[in-house]
Image (cartoon, rainbow, N blue to C red; front, side):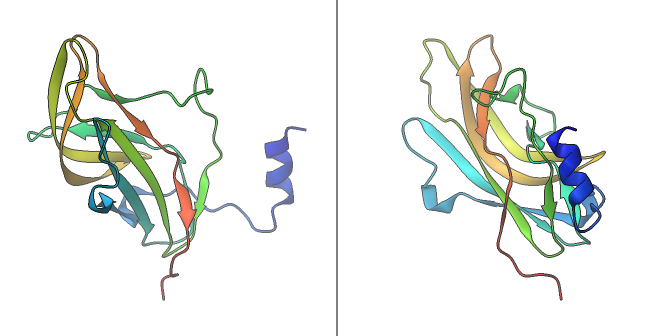
Length: 163
């Protein structure tokens, strides 16, 4: 029997339903420039569950958008050692608690032929919905290729349960 199936069969409580975008709140934290340096910039992401316990995708799809809300040609780098892609167990996010991740991008013209992409918004796709916030950033990539960003998996952090 696969390990995941064993874990599901022996769990002491039933699994909650998938998280819905409407029950989550996104916030950003640049941590006073902690992500900046070596031609990079970035931000911390925090996703708080305002509803009932739910399961959250550990590596949600992020889209960077322009001022007219169009999706920009900026894509997540494939995590090292995970090809063709990561296989990650969803994160159980309790009511009132939050999960955090970080993203970093190239913030300077480091390529022989660089192009600059101006970001106005960040969107996390959650199931059929999305949560989004303004984000002012300049991402650089090589001419003729999509620009990229690094994204860490979401991880649960201590929080206060909803009262």
